[in-house]
Image 1 (tube, each protein chain N blue to C red):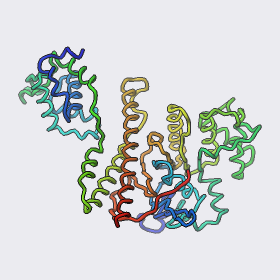
Image 2: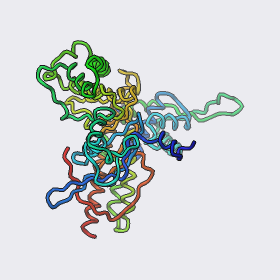
Image 3: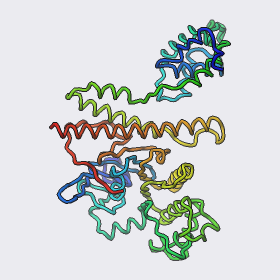
Image 4: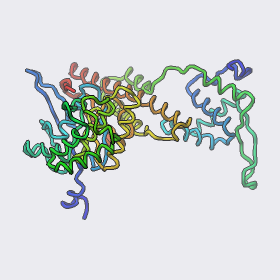
Length: 258
Length: 198
């Protein structure tokens, strides 16, 4: 049974695929292109790093990948299914299960809440019993190196380094197959940042989670086997075999909020 | 220490020019262990990595430069299998160590790998623009590929080798990021220019 046959294709479908994905935003009269014909595939358990400067469209690409936004052109597929053909509820369920998004502004601690509660709550909202949620939270916290006494600390008073780890644990607890990370290390110190990036790679490798990491720092993407550069809505990857030369091209300036 | 290498090495012609890094590195390798030319070429390529694109023919030329300066010497030594005769082995001289010190202390000329692209950009005609875009995109891909090759965790922690790898990786990431930003901005400038003149 070759990979070209129907059942073969099912087996070989990439975890996530972008096919000619375009996205624009309208600001009054002006239409600005954020992403232009972006295509790539991410296999289960593999990793892709996306390097781009501020406002290059990284965050939009990640939001499209996790189904928080839908493309204006082309198709985004998760495990072979087009996200644009799913209902809002289905996409929301994906984000509570097989897909996790990690962003710096996703940190919403509640007063009086411990690290353990915070992480277990994330599992609980995926429909698990409290006992099972706590068991998984403990395992996830252990995995990111926030075990024992740290698990009983209050979330409102965490150091940036621990906070980043707890956010990772919160994403891991739902046992995702795709982990999208927008700016993996908003940590101030270089060494802390390197350690966190290394942890991210290690955890993804151990648990066979596919990683999609976007950063404006190339050093935050070190150790990722495949890299792409995003500029003016155009994605260029190490995987590309050749470049199609098109000239002249017409485009509006890329505009994107981080 | 700088004044120690007198005589021919004192003129320090070898320390300037395009291949000064390779000549300096070769001195270091000969000091580490005398070797024949092919072995030196291999050791140089292994040590510096494939991005240097080291060609063994170039290595022989560089060794000749160093011989002319009196910084290394050759000895004819029997091969392991005596029937195969002798081979030329490069050894350090009394000047080598001081010359290496001097090279390490020398300020580096400012250079980046975009020099070639810069030259192409300077003289490109309108019909060259598609080719120029291609060259820039290839350079971008090469930068990304190099970045993926810079994997952390080589060498034993705490060893000089690990320190060397950390510094190398750090420097290369910084440089590649600057290169990528420059290429992306240049492509965008070219696109915007094309839109204006079209």
